Length: 310
Image 1 (tube, rainbow, N blue to C red):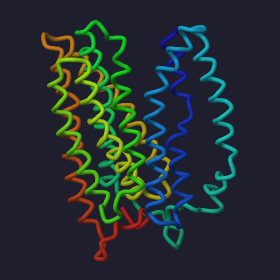
Image 2: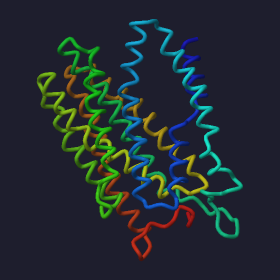
Image 3: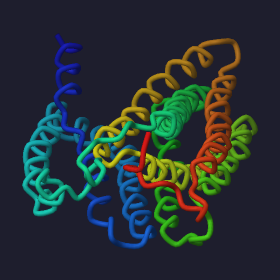
Protein backbone atom coordinates (compact mmCIF):
# COMPACT_ATOMS: atom_id res chain seq x y z
CA UNK A 1 0.00 0.00 0.00
CA UNK A 2 2.85 2.36 0.84
CA UNK A 3 4.51 1.76 -2.53
CA UNK A 4 1.25 2.38 -4.37
CA UNK A 5 0.69 5.62 -2.45
CA UNK A 6 4.22 6.81 -3.18
CA UNK A 7 3.79 5.96 -6.87
CA UNK A 8 0.52 7.90 -6.99
CA UNK A 9 2.12 10.92 -5.34
CA UNK A 10 4.98 10.98 -7.82
CA UNK A 11 2.69 10.38 -10.79
CA UNK A 12 0.34 13.23 -9.92
CA UNK A 13 2.84 15.80 -8.63
CA UNK A 14 2.91 18.83 -10.98
CA UNK A 15 6.26 19.48 -12.67
CA UNK A 16 6.61 23.07 -11.52
CA UNK A 17 10.36 23.28 -12.17
CA UNK A 18 10.18 22.69 -15.94
CA UNK A 19 7.08 24.89 -16.27
CA UNK A 20 8.79 27.70 -14.35
CA UNK A 21 11.78 27.53 -16.69
CA UNK A 22 9.47 27.84 -19.69
CA UNK A 23 8.00 30.98 -18.18
CA UNK A 24 11.47 32.40 -17.61
CA UNK A 25 12.19 31.81 -21.27
CA UNK A 26 9.03 33.65 -22.24
CA UNK A 27 9.84 36.53 -19.90
CA UNK A 28 13.36 36.92 -21.29
CA UNK A 29 12.70 36.22 -24.97
CA UNK A 30 13.25 39.89 -25.97
CA UNK A 31 16.08 40.49 -23.53
CA UNK A 32 19.82 39.74 -23.61
CA UNK A 33 20.83 36.09 -23.29
CA UNK A 34 22.49 36.91 -19.98
CA UNK A 35 19.06 37.49 -18.43
CA UNK A 36 17.99 33.92 -19.21
CA UNK A 37 21.27 32.62 -17.82
CA UNK A 38 20.60 34.59 -14.63
CA UNK A 39 17.09 33.13 -14.35
CA UNK A 40 18.29 29.57 -14.97
CA UNK A 41 21.12 30.09 -12.49
CA UNK A 42 18.53 31.05 -9.89
CA UNK A 43 16.42 27.99 -10.76
CA UNK A 44 19.40 25.65 -10.43
CA UNK A 45 20.36 27.24 -7.12
CA UNK A 46 16.83 26.76 -5.83
CA UNK A 47 16.94 23.11 -6.92
CA UNK A 48 20.25 22.53 -5.15
CA UNK A 49 19.08 24.18 -1.92
CA UNK A 50 15.88 22.15 -2.04
CA UNK A 51 17.79 18.89 -2.40
CA UNK A 52 20.15 19.90 0.40
CA UNK A 53 17.79 21.52 2.91
CA UNK A 54 14.66 19.45 2.20
CA UNK A 55 15.79 16.11 3.67
CA UNK A 56 17.34 17.85 6.68
CA UNK A 57 14.14 19.78 7.37
CA UNK A 58 12.04 16.64 6.99
CA UNK A 59 14.24 14.81 9.46
CA UNK A 60 14.05 17.60 12.01
CA UNK A 61 10.28 17.96 11.80
CA UNK A 62 9.68 14.22 11.92
CA UNK A 63 11.95 13.69 14.92
CA UNK A 64 11.08 16.81 16.92
CA UNK A 65 7.32 16.99 16.23
CA UNK A 66 5.68 14.01 14.50
CA UNK A 67 6.38 11.73 11.51
CA UNK A 68 3.20 12.88 9.74
CA UNK A 69 4.06 16.59 9.85
CA UNK A 70 6.50 16.74 6.87
CA UNK A 71 4.02 14.98 4.57
CA UNK A 72 1.19 17.24 5.72
CA UNK A 73 3.26 20.36 5.12
CA UNK A 74 4.31 19.06 1.71
CA UNK A 75 0.67 18.48 0.77
CA UNK A 76 -0.37 21.96 1.94
CA UNK A 77 2.53 23.64 0.13
CA UNK A 78 1.75 21.72 -3.05
CA UNK A 79 -1.93 22.69 -3.05
CA UNK A 80 -1.39 26.35 -2.14
CA UNK A 81 1.77 27.19 -4.09
CA UNK A 82 1.01 25.14 -7.20
CA UNK A 83 -2.35 26.88 -7.54
CA UNK A 84 -0.66 30.25 -6.94
CA UNK A 85 1.84 29.42 -9.68
CA UNK A 86 -0.92 28.34 -12.06
CA UNK A 87 -2.85 31.61 -11.72
CA UNK A 88 0.18 33.90 -11.54
CA UNK A 89 0.00 36.82 -14.04
CA UNK A 90 2.98 35.41 -15.97
CA UNK A 91 0.75 32.54 -17.11
CA UNK A 92 -0.75 34.79 -19.81
CA UNK A 93 2.61 34.76 -21.58
CA UNK A 94 2.00 31.15 -22.51
CA UNK A 95 -1.61 31.35 -23.65
CA UNK A 96 -2.02 29.84 -27.14
CA UNK A 97 -3.61 33.02 -28.40
CA UNK A 98 -0.50 35.05 -27.57
CA UNK A 99 1.93 32.43 -29.01
CA UNK A 100 4.98 33.91 -27.23
CA UNK A 101 6.84 30.65 -27.62
CA UNK A 102 5.15 29.30 -30.71
CA UNK A 103 6.77 26.57 -32.77
CA UNK A 104 5.55 27.13 -36.31
CA UNK A 105 6.64 28.97 -39.40
CA UNK A 106 5.04 32.16 -40.64
CA UNK A 107 2.60 30.04 -42.61
CA UNK A 108 1.53 28.23 -39.46
CA UNK A 109 3.23 24.97 -40.34
CA UNK A 110 5.02 23.23 -37.46
CA UNK A 111 8.49 22.15 -38.52
CA UNK A 112 10.16 18.84 -37.62
CA UNK A 113 11.96 18.46 -34.31
CA UNK A 114 15.75 18.11 -34.26
CA UNK A 115 15.75 15.30 -31.74
CA UNK A 116 19.48 14.68 -32.05
CA UNK A 117 20.07 18.15 -30.62
CA UNK A 118 17.50 17.69 -27.88
CA UNK A 119 18.99 14.31 -26.93
CA UNK A 120 22.35 15.87 -26.00
CA UNK A 121 21.22 17.98 -23.02
CA UNK A 122 18.77 15.26 -21.95
CA UNK A 123 21.63 12.72 -21.87
CA UNK A 124 23.67 15.31 -20.01
CA UNK A 125 21.00 15.58 -17.34
CA UNK A 126 20.86 11.79 -17.00
CA UNK A 127 24.61 11.82 -16.41
CA UNK A 128 24.20 14.70 -13.96
CA UNK A 129 21.55 12.76 -12.04
CA UNK A 130 23.80 9.68 -12.06
CA UNK A 131 26.53 11.82 -10.54
CA UNK A 132 24.21 13.08 -7.81
CA UNK A 133 22.72 9.70 -6.91
CA UNK A 134 26.01 7.81 -6.93
CA UNK A 135 27.75 10.48 -4.86
CA UNK A 136 25.05 10.24 -2.19
CA UNK A 137 25.26 6.43 -2.07
CA UNK A 138 29.06 6.44 -2.02
CA UNK A 139 29.11 8.97 0.81
CA UNK A 140 26.84 6.74 2.90
CA UNK A 141 29.37 3.93 2.50
CA UNK A 142 32.27 6.28 3.26
CA UNK A 143 30.63 7.70 6.39
CA UNK A 144 29.71 4.18 7.48
CA UNK A 145 33.40 3.37 7.87
CA UNK A 146 33.46 5.93 10.68
CA UNK A 147 30.15 4.84 12.18
CA UNK A 148 28.45 7.97 10.87
CA UNK A 149 26.36 6.73 7.96
CA UNK A 150 23.37 8.76 9.19
CA UNK A 151 25.44 11.93 8.72
CA UNK A 152 26.13 11.28 5.03
CA UNK A 153 23.42 13.77 4.11
CA UNK A 154 25.36 16.51 5.88
CA UNK A 155 28.46 15.62 3.86
CA UNK A 156 26.47 15.82 0.65
CA UNK A 157 25.03 19.16 1.77
CA UNK A 158 28.50 20.71 1.66
CA UNK A 159 28.76 19.92 -2.05
CA UNK A 160 25.23 21.17 -2.61
CA UNK A 161 25.91 24.52 -0.97
CA UNK A 162 29.05 25.25 -2.99
CA UNK A 163 27.24 24.06 -6.11
CA UNK A 164 24.34 26.44 -5.45
CA UNK A 165 26.68 29.39 -4.93
CA UNK A 166 28.63 28.56 -8.10
CA UNK A 167 25.39 28.24 -10.08
CA UNK A 168 24.46 31.80 -9.14
CA UNK A 169 27.87 33.02 -10.30
CA UNK A 170 27.15 31.91 -13.89
CA UNK A 171 25.12 35.08 -14.39
CA UNK A 172 28.37 37.05 -14.07
CA UNK A 173 30.56 34.93 -16.32
CA UNK A 174 31.97 36.48 -19.48
CA UNK A 175 29.49 36.56 -22.35
CA UNK A 176 32.26 35.53 -24.73
CA UNK A 177 32.35 32.12 -23.06
CA UNK A 178 29.85 30.13 -25.13
CA UNK A 179 27.50 27.55 -23.67
CA UNK A 180 29.47 24.75 -25.31
CA UNK A 181 32.75 25.93 -23.79
CA UNK A 182 31.12 26.39 -20.41
CA UNK A 183 29.90 22.79 -20.56
CA UNK A 184 33.39 21.49 -21.37
CA UNK A 185 35.17 23.63 -18.78
CA UNK A 186 32.71 22.84 -15.98
CA UNK A 187 32.52 19.12 -16.77
CA UNK A 188 36.31 18.96 -17.00
CA UNK A 189 36.48 20.45 -13.52
CA UNK A 190 34.04 17.81 -12.29
CA UNK A 191 36.24 15.03 -13.69
CA UNK A 192 39.40 16.41 -12.09
CA UNK A 193 37.81 16.98 -8.70
CA UNK A 194 35.77 13.74 -8.68
CA UNK A 195 39.07 11.88 -8.96
CA UNK A 196 39.96 13.34 -5.54
CA UNK A 197 37.07 11.46 -3.90
CA UNK A 198 39.33 8.41 -3.53
CA UNK A 199 41.91 10.29 -1.44
CA UNK A 200 40.23 11.37 1.84
CA UNK A 201 40.89 9.23 4.88
CA UNK A 202 38.99 11.41 7.33
CA UNK A 203 35.62 13.15 7.45
CA UNK A 204 37.32 16.56 7.49
CA UNK A 205 39.33 15.90 4.32
CA UNK A 206 36.21 14.58 2.57
CA UNK A 207 34.35 17.78 3.46
CA UNK A 208 37.08 19.80 1.75
CA UNK A 209 36.96 17.65 -1.40
CA UNK A 210 33.16 17.85 -1.55
CA UNK A 211 33.21 21.62 -1.18
CA UNK A 212 35.63 21.93 -4.10
CA UNK A 213 33.73 19.37 -6.16
CA UNK A 214 30.51 21.35 -5.87
CA UNK A 215 32.03 24.40 -7.55
CA UNK A 216 31.88 23.06 -11.15
CA UNK A 217 28.64 21.12 -10.57
CA UNK A 218 26.28 24.10 -10.44
CA UNK A 219 27.60 25.79 -13.61
CA UNK A 220 27.42 22.49 -15.49
CA UNK A 221 23.74 22.08 -14.65
CA UNK A 222 22.91 25.71 -15.51
CA UNK A 223 24.73 25.37 -18.82
CA UNK A 224 22.90 22.21 -19.84
CA UNK A 225 19.55 23.82 -19.07
CA UNK A 226 20.62 26.84 -21.15
CA UNK A 227 21.58 24.64 -24.10
CA UNK A 228 18.29 22.80 -23.74
CA UNK A 229 16.43 26.10 -24.03
CA UNK A 230 18.34 26.92 -27.22
CA UNK A 231 17.87 23.64 -29.07
CA UNK A 232 14.31 22.92 -27.92
CA UNK A 233 11.57 23.55 -30.49
CA UNK A 234 9.67 26.50 -29.13
CA UNK A 235 6.34 24.72 -29.34
CA UNK A 236 7.80 21.91 -27.20
CA UNK A 237 9.70 23.92 -24.59
CA UNK A 238 7.62 22.50 -21.75
CA UNK A 239 8.17 18.96 -22.99
CA UNK A 240 11.93 19.40 -23.34
CA UNK A 241 12.29 21.10 -19.94
CA UNK A 242 10.35 18.22 -18.39
CA UNK A 243 12.64 15.72 -20.14
CA UNK A 244 15.65 17.52 -18.70
CA UNK A 245 14.24 17.48 -15.17
CA UNK A 246 13.16 13.84 -15.55
CA UNK A 247 16.65 12.98 -16.77
CA UNK A 248 18.04 14.08 -13.40
CA UNK A 249 15.51 11.93 -11.55
CA UNK A 250 16.17 8.87 -13.70
CA UNK A 251 19.91 9.35 -13.45
CA UNK A 252 19.74 9.71 -9.68
CA UNK A 253 18.00 6.36 -9.38
CA UNK A 254 20.53 4.76 -11.74
CA UNK A 255 23.51 6.25 -9.95
CA UNK A 256 22.24 5.27 -6.51
CA UNK A 257 21.71 1.66 -7.53
CA UNK A 258 25.08 1.33 -9.27
CA UNK A 259 27.06 2.93 -6.46
CA UNK A 260 25.10 0.94 -3.89
CA UNK A 261 26.08 -2.32 -5.53
CA UNK A 262 29.74 -1.34 -5.54
CA UNK A 263 29.56 -0.09 -1.96
CA UNK A 264 28.31 -3.50 -0.83
CA UNK A 265 31.48 -5.12 -2.19
CA UNK A 266 34.79 -5.70 -0.46
CA UNK A 267 36.00 -2.12 -1.00
CA UNK A 268 33.29 0.52 -0.39
CA UNK A 269 35.47 3.21 -1.94
CA UNK A 270 34.88 1.62 -5.35
CA UNK A 271 31.47 3.31 -5.25
CA UNK A 272 33.22 6.57 -6.09
CA UNK A 273 33.97 5.13 -9.54
CA UNK A 274 30.37 5.85 -10.52
CA UNK A 275 30.42 9.64 -9.96
CA UNK A 276 33.82 9.78 -11.64
CA UNK A 277 32.47 7.95 -14.70
CA UNK A 278 29.35 10.13 -14.70
CA UNK A 279 31.51 13.26 -14.70
CA UNK A 280 33.59 11.84 -17.54
CA UNK A 281 30.39 11.11 -19.47
CA UNK A 282 29.38 14.75 -19.00
CA UNK A 283 32.72 15.85 -20.43
CA UNK A 284 32.34 13.56 -23.45
CA UNK A 285 28.79 14.79 -24.05
CA UNK A 286 30.05 18.37 -23.83
CA UNK A 287 32.66 17.68 -26.50
CA UNK A 288 30.10 15.95 -28.71
CA UNK A 289 27.62 18.79 -28.26
CA UNK A 290 30.28 21.30 -29.27
CA UNK A 291 30.96 19.45 -32.49
CA UNK A 292 27.30 18.97 -33.39
CA UNK A 293 26.14 22.45 -32.39
CA UNK A 294 28.97 24.07 -34.32
CA UNK A 295 27.85 22.14 -37.38
CA UNK A 296 24.36 23.59 -36.85
CA UNK A 297 25.55 27.18 -36.47
CA UNK A 298 24.76 29.77 -39.06
CA UNK A 299 27.58 31.61 -40.85
CA UNK A 300 27.15 34.40 -38.28
CA UNK A 301 28.11 31.96 -35.54
CA UNK A 302 24.62 31.98 -34.05
CA UNK A 303 22.74 28.80 -33.31
CA UNK A 304 19.61 28.47 -35.39
CA UNK A 305 16.42 29.45 -33.64
CA UNK A 306 14.55 26.54 -32.15
CA UNK A 307 11.76 26.92 -34.62
CA UNK A 308 14.07 26.97 -37.59
CA UNK A 309 13.90 23.30 -38.47
CA UNK A 310 14.42 19.69 -37.59
